Length: 543
Image (cartoon, rainbow, N blue to C red):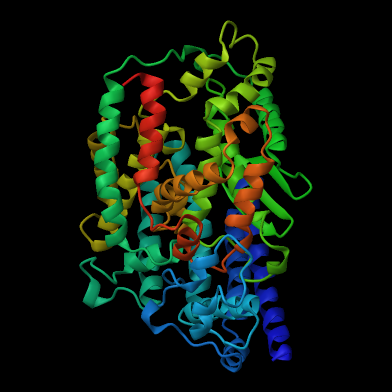
């Protein structure tokens, strides 16, 4: 058994290293690749990702999994995750055999707990991968590489028609991928349960399909709209000083200082610039984040840095025992977003945070902030003013952006909306949800990079991250009641420790549902998130 485990770890490690190499190529494409290098890069990605896929579907892995007692979870329909089980009982503490006994049905019960989790997760990855033909994997990588470059040019020129053929092809490939995994097909062509879109959602957020997400998002939309209406009737805080000139180099310097203060280890991570902020992991000690800056508003660049920093803290807090294995990743995109949005909004937009950082910020920008005190700045930072651009949206309206994208994706995959109709549908939905219309396609349908990457089903993760994050935050505040005072002192150690020990260190050892239930004792709910917003903005706006 030890020999089989060692061999399985070796094979998995080779595949992980190839996947990280592909991530390095993608990071370079988004940051430093010369414009004419796109076609070569697409071919390089096709080769490297094809090799990584071939490593994962190696028949030897299947044989080793069989010998180690892996049994496919036939109820999961190709899904990568499972619902809450016995592991949830002790999530947030060291996982031992008793805590993870519920996984024994999917991996050898005689294995140590960590190895059982490894076999279970790798087995699911293997089962999903063997359903994808290698030529199809290479075609997806090649198409996504070309599509991302086409999107960047289309966004620059506000020309959706130039990107549309790429998007159409990506949707075809995404539907085929889900069908290979066992989702969709003629029986589910209407977009109901077990649809292709459910399969794509499950890839990013195991265990949650369109029906469950819609059940969360529908009531949330009504509650957010009601809160927005109350806020709109109140006088807004003054924020003209945020729209003066803020030197981009100084913004970069302040962002680096904040990152360092938050605990960003530059020996293990780095910050660069790109067309769209993102985080990628190239190794256990190599995490890359990016941002973009606006000269007439210092907040988008800063908050995207804090947001991506939250993703990086998750990746850099994984248990070293998981290194170079399939377990060394976040459990889901929703859980990952819970960490980034918690740092960006709950911490980064708090009064306590700015009481600690505003004096330093003012030394960088004394002229535009002349006469502005910390309370004025805090109120301006949290002004609710619906924006056409998601990454610049306030906390209250942000989730409406994501719900809009979720509903449009559903229509794209159930056949009730074509790609060519998408800009008009986008603008109409924006008008209906937020009362605003984008001035052009760059500000509208082309603003996000995700679809050009083939990341369909990803967008709901942002709202799910808000919901997960506030459930976690309520528990953190119970455990660390003096959090506010620590934030004012720019002391983040207790926050990092709690998040690392309760959430981040486990990687993929627990499913999202198990992790949430183990930490909070409750199923996923929008109540803590809405409660947080109502308390915060009632105070800010006096409503």
